[in-house]
Length: 324
Image (cartoon, rainbow, N blue to C red; front, side):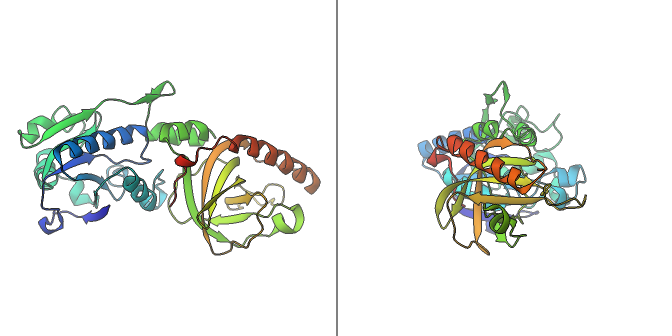
């Protein structure tokens, strides 16, 4: 897959000079609804012997339209993960548009002329609720008027699961409720983050007997809520079972300004991971974070966590693990 950065105004020299099938959307998370858009576009592209292109943005439109601070935005699929997933789903060209204030001011007709016709779209495929400006005038129902028969249009209906629409909004809600099982059902793969192992307090190895990899995460991931989870951890191209916590080390820390930490323990693994980049796939929720009365009480609970985690990880489907 080739990633092509686009800006406003569009530079024709950046565009692949041939007809394409173009999938449209922001695609945060690349969930099953998004995958249906891409799969439909891929089928059409194959039938017409055309490349499959996808156009999205480098930041959420809310940064401009709702004046949200970019550093506060959290994503289900930050740039690196999105690229991995799009390549996995068979996209040939990924057009990533800089969502600037100037681009945001484009009127619907100008957007269609410059960024759909301008990209040589022969077919445009998008979800039924895709918009490209004010919702009332820039929706999939009005797109044929702006297109003026210059390309075909395919609108993908709502994808439903777990008694509702499959959406990035619901996935974020599930993450906030510890419901990573439902998250993974909607994604069709295990929700995964990546980060570098950094030095921590070393209590896991010196006091508890459960050494942990303390993760520093630079990408703007939308993290699961505070708690303990059964996870798979990818180290040196191998996925290994373990558990991970997101929390504030309540047993050892009493300060109210203690930073949030992500710590993963890999079962029966002793190698030094400091400085390495690892991935954590969140499989299932085990329990809330607790403040234990003693280290012995904490160790006893960790033994129980390991037993339960191994039970739940026994059903992991390797094909749903994402290698970053």
